[in-house]
Every structure is written in C-alpha cells, then in structure tokens.
Image 1: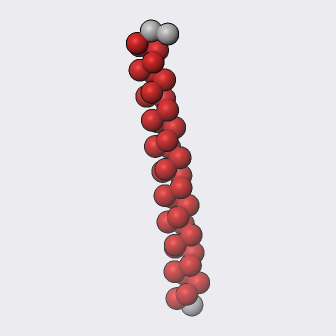
Image 2: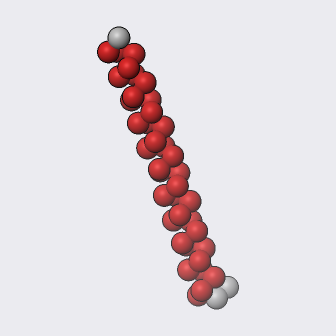
Image 3: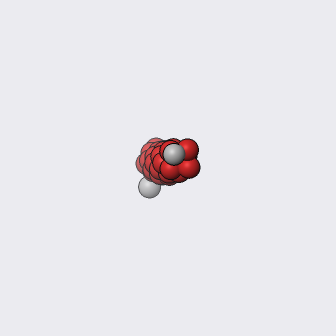
Length: 41
C-alpha cells in the first residue's frame, strides 16, 4: 500500500467519524428540542 492510499484511507475514516458525530449531535439536539416543547406545554 502506497503512502497516498494510506492517507486517503485515513481521510475517509476521519470524514466518516465526523459525519457520525454530526448525525449524533443533530439527533441529540432534536431530542432536546422535543423534550423542551413537551415540558413547556
């Protein structure tokens, strides 16, 4: 495996991690919004 391939694999893995974190963060925010709405009524 060349150094470039290894670099691309690392970048792809980082992008995947970032994407998963973003999704988790979004769902946490959505859940927080829903509970805020539920508690405010």
